[in-house]
Length: 75
Image 1 (cartoon, helix red, strand yellow):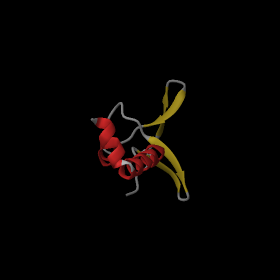
Image 2 (cartoon, helix red, strand yellow; image 1 turned 90 degrees about the vertical axis):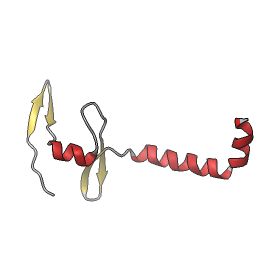
Image 3 (cartoon, one colour; image 1 turned 60 degrees about the vertical axis):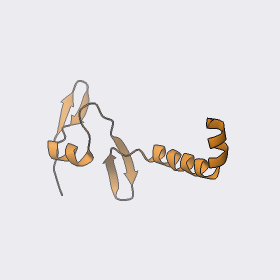
Image 4 (cartoon, one colour; image 1 turned 135 degrees about the vertical axis):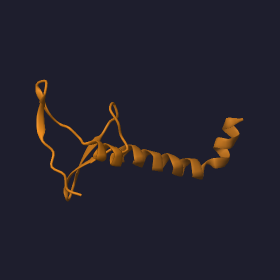
């Protein structure tokens, strides 16, 4: 999929309007946050937050390792 997007003036900044098709594929809507990630291939625009995902992976590992302790604390 190759789309061309035109830059436009938004107040004192420059912005880009994303077509509905791209918003649907990103699963985002007005008011949501997108993240800009620099990759080896260039710049990636994503709704996925890599640093948050890494934190969640670490939390899940801790919960898995300490399941019994967490269960007792919950009582």
